[in-house]
Length: 570
Image (tube, rainbow, N blue to C red):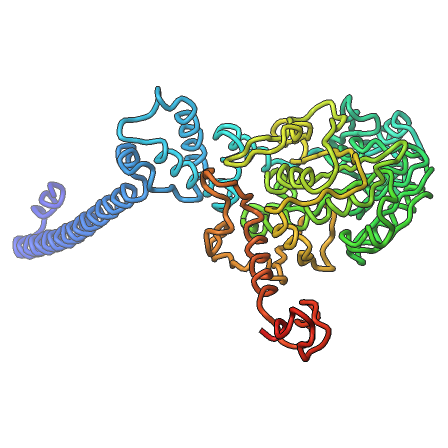
């Protein structure tokens, strides 16, 4: 500005005035434009500030809503204690459920010292059952059975063991090779293995393998069999001898049958029976692959074998009975929810019939034999000790030690039931104790071929047991296989299971909750007795005609018999 003013002084006066006027106008325009720009910027800044405030308010509202939802979903510890664990955490939060299971088990093990005021044992047990159902997926019936068999700590340990797969085990075929030679060959193929245990001389446990274990040249040549460790036990307990006649009542797919033949060194005769025709193909293929030459394959219902092959014709019989599969949950998780009390009673009914047929096939006068081995892949008492105790009452047999170096003894007391003291000779196996599938083994010695007469109070039960239980032809009779639910079609168990698994329609089929003064009846035969009572009632109804007259001893339908006139027509 100073330079412009100095220059203007050298010019004329009118030009100086006009230039000065122009400069003033330009300054006013520039100042007005700057004021307008400043006003627009302040308006934009104020609008942005208002929008920011609205965003902050909405974020605060969302945070308050999420906090309220968290309070609703995750109740405080005080609320959980007050409701006695009524609220079950979401299934996705399994870590919290597992932690609560551990805390509940710890409290129940030391209940007097660690329980909280106002919390009863029933409250803790109800919370534990809900958490176990959420975490492991068992239905109410099977969960109650496990908790009645074991204390809470061992029951949880068993359920955890069921979640892990059992080791892969091979059985060496001694008809073709030795275990040491087989192990050396498989190690060269990249299979990491070790001997199974001291109780088995032919077992190998596989830890890892670079090749499929079921497709090696040695497997195809019949040098070994893929077989679970628990299925070794019934064959070891039976202890077959050379040149004997032995019956395997449920043979498919052939693991135990080929084991019997290898112990007999291909001498004597082994009858391998299988009720399912479609499984006979795999049974025959394994027998041929393993080089067995002393086996006869047959297809009969196991209950008809005494008539088919002859009573008192066998030295030893092996019955790995069809069962509920509650010992092999690690192989089939559907067992957790598919089993009910009604199905267990139906299984027990079939198992009793098969066991009596197995005993009838054995010759008590055999010089080297006279033994029967009964086994299942179940851990339930109704399918094990109860069936064994029934056979002790119905046939001239006794329980003898199974010859197994390990395993827990059978139960002689369970709930309100009391079994024969010799039931302790049976053996139980659990995955959390022995690292194998749940299994049961019992060994009988037949003392006489005569069938004892039933007592008066057992006649009705015998009548019901004579009726065959329903068994589908498509269902295998091998105990290691899982069997589908087979409803009974003979009317033996008339009560129908409700939609809730483990509950039945009426209370008559359930075991008595407590012993009574009268003679105690077994819970799993009450339905059979009800059926027998109905049959007796129908048999006592009077009938007209020739059939009724002949039954009463009259000679003709005219009533001419002395002392019997008109009796047949009443």
